[in-house]
Amino acid sequence: TYGKTSSRGKLIVFEGCDRSGKSTQCAMLTERLRKDGHKVEQLKFPDRTTSIGHMINNYLANKEEQRDEVIHLLFSANRWESMQKMSNLLLGGTTLVVDRYAYSGIAYSAAKGMDLQWCRQPDVGLIKPDKVIFMTLSADRASERAAFGEERYEKKEFQAKVEKIFEQLFEKSYWQNVSGDGTVEEVHNDVYGVVSQIVSSDCGPLEKLWT
Ligand code: Z5A
Ligand code: MG
Image 1 (tube, protein in one colour):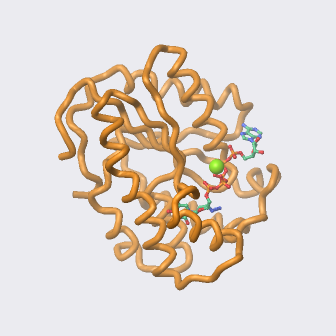
Image 2 (cartoon, rainbow, N blue to C red):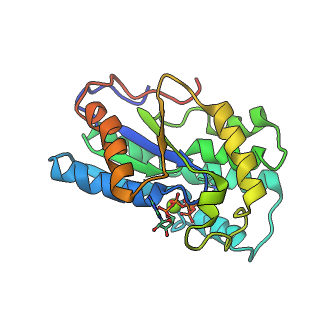
């Protein structure tokens, strides 16, 4: 395990297809938990600020090509380079609200036809989330939202494949579906309902994902 304090922060991950409202909800949840008096930081993957993140950004913006295997491993490496910082924060009592994680890594690569087990392997051993909020939204609804279609993966048919893979990754014990089809406040209240219990509870030591 990564450490052993019961007063540690919790790792809350938002997942889901494009434009389902993850970034909007991450920001609202972070603010709400802070108001409640928790120490909270918001993170997002890909983290486009690092050198690996720059390569990912160029790929997503269609400025650079990469083999499917290479971009997959770069997305994973981009998470690994944050692990020390994340475990330090969590063990220091800070809850992390994270916009996308390993599940996006697998879903978007496997949707291209890559082998799912191969795709999972590089992320084995990352810090395991205490809760995954899986935001659902139909591809039709998503495509009506602002800025859809500007980046590489933002095509309706592809997003439908991604959704199918996410369904395969769903793990009952720590995932919760939340519908993204409501006003931002309605969705926020649903999210807060799921998360508020977990942030104040004892989740035991940090665990490693898929080990
Ligand atoms: N990717 C990958 O391949 N491998 C990996 O390992 C990882 C990611 C981590 C970039 O991700 C791409 O990287 C992504 C997956 C791939 N490709 N795709 N598709 P990103 O996280 O940087 O993507 P993004 O550009 O931030 O978009 P997003 O995350 O898909 O959107 P969102 O965060 O879910 O939604 P939002 O930004 O909160 O909302 C979208 C719009 O809808 C915005 O105008 C909002 O104001 C509006 N909105 C939000 N909520 C509502 C409600 N409730 N009603 C109406 N309108 C709303
Ligand atoms: Mg986003």
